Length: 576
Image (cartoon, rainbow, N blue to C red; front, top):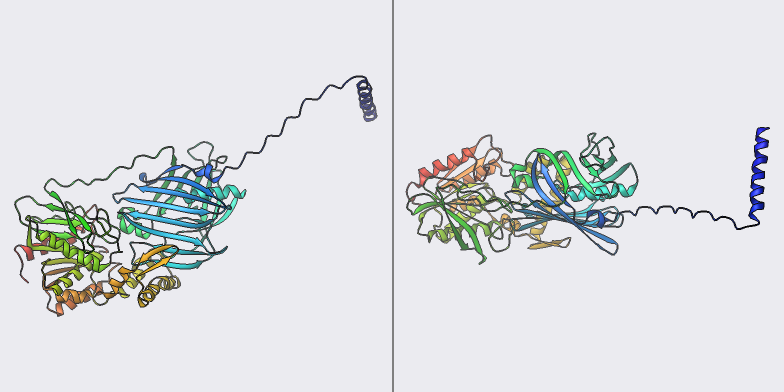
């Protein structure tokens, strides 16, 4: 009853309104409020252009990074430049070519240390695979792997950078999903494989910047998130990254022992990059430093420094060779301080301030330069030309052994003795690199037997093939790489070189060295002794490396042994 009465009243109201409206113009309705247009999705350039980041581990700032973006056609190019705040002057440049779907089509990582440039490249060859190149100048030769499958969406390396995480945040936002499955690959691993990664929204994690949301990344087979990133949802800008347990790659740790071990990594967005301070070691007051250059075997100048002790010369002189790969010279004032001795160090060919082209520590080049360094020292009035001794470890030690053999062939006496680590008897190739792969690389990565054999195929077996084909250089993924170091290693016989010389030699070896086999060092000592060469072999038990830290060339017990040997054999000018 009520419903019927109410319905008739409404109808009457509508009829009256209709009749009244017939006589005059109806009052116009207010214009409708327009629906707000949707917020446009930020472009990659808007998100990443001119972004700045700092990178720290355990509270210590390690590097600063700057991102830029360029667009052309169907591709987007994102670039990063990172400067490391380490005693070693390192610059890393990353360039990634993205599809419109934000997948990496090509990725280049260039790492320049002391003017020497290493490169790692990924290039997509189809929908499901990528080709890979490691042209690491700290390793013997390039490694090229075809058809890594499935293709990764993004790189994620064991050298920290904001770039991969910023791209990851963009892909997550573009998906519109709470859980996003991605594939990543570490180009700095020696045998990289594609790994599944799940990125998930983590609303319970709160960031230091208000308005940011947290995303957590979990690798396949792991329960604990590998990392957390904080992103501003509207702008999609990456604000920070936290990696609770971060480990640097093998070669970074080998070049910079301070980077060894695990640590908490933090990447933070900043408005302006801090200044990169210059690192200048302070020399002890008791040492006088003289700049000394000489002409190398290629005609280019090698730059060095000569540290003189107190007193009047001429002084006996120790020539200390640089460490392996793209490493600068030691500071002669602190590398080693034998009482009463001068110390000379120099940048290798193409490294630091020295001219020429770096050739991956090609032994013949290093040996010939070492002889020319001694020849230059013999012309200095401060130096006793009858007491010049060479000191080198690893490739430096192998170059020193070859230098002694060369001077014996020439009937010269540029060096009257040597302290050598890293020397192996017999032919070095392929035995030495295979030992280094099995005892250095494989344990670091935890490779199983099939993975180890797979790496041997793409590295050592390929290198043997290049030598068989007498290749001097190769071109891979639009990058050229010299094979000179391979050839020199294959040609060298260090035991034979030592046997030809008649000056005193101290061969030193770490008993647990992962890069030089102790049995090979013993074989070199035995080969030299059998030929009547005056050598002494000293093996240091329980040690994995002979190298020192904090700018010292030798570990403390090794330096003590070297000092004692110098006093015993060079208190006065020796005779062969």
